[in-house]
Amino acid sequence: PLVKRMQLEIGFGWKDLLALPACFALITAWLRFESGSPIQVYLATTLFIIVPTITFQPRLIVICNNFRAHAFELEDKRVSSVAFLIASAIFAYGIPVVAIILGHLIGYPILGWEWDTFLVQILFAIVYTTAAIQVGKTLSVAARGDYTKLTRGYVLFIFLSILFSGFFVNVNNVPDYLRWLVYLSLTFWGLSGAVLNQLQFNGNFGEDPCLSFVTCIAFDRNFLARYF
Image 1: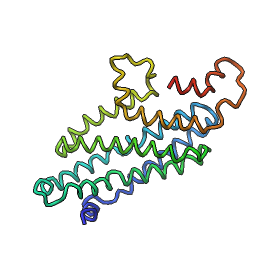
Image 2: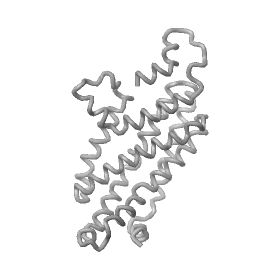
Image 3: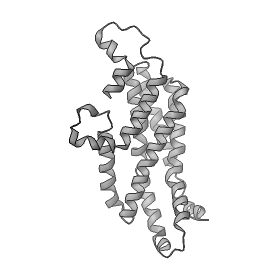
Image 4: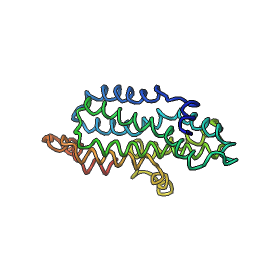
């Protein structure tokens, strides 16, 4: 009954469901021209991991409105906290999970990637996205459903998480006193797992003969894994 009630209050959100697959289609169509290049793998994997958290940030408004709509009922215990947790999780995570799967189903054929990496790839993307949304849900409760207060903390968290993910800043160059930001970065763990998964199964790296010292380094899996 609570899920049906939330569906009437919030709606399904078809636009949120279709936005991410559309983004993935544009991204992969652009990167299709870099087929066989390590740059394609890193850019596509990075965008596959990062874009969902940005695309679904407006859903935090839905989460805040959902919390405020049931705040008094939760305090009066007219609505079970467990029931609200389950019902709100369906609306918070349901559409992102389906959209991530659809986006990867569109992106993989366009890029021509091996399907051996598919399950692990979407696993990292889904876990990272749901963990980021869960941080937003926690902040929405702390802000008592005030989206303006939530935005400041969440945007700062996502910015630092992406900045210290290993793609934009080499983690080997991060000072020791800031290294804890790397280990607390959700993006670092999600992106590292997804990239290593692609390096493990992508057969293009290291098979072509390299003609110079630079190209030998660029097509070496171990070097790429260490550098990023």
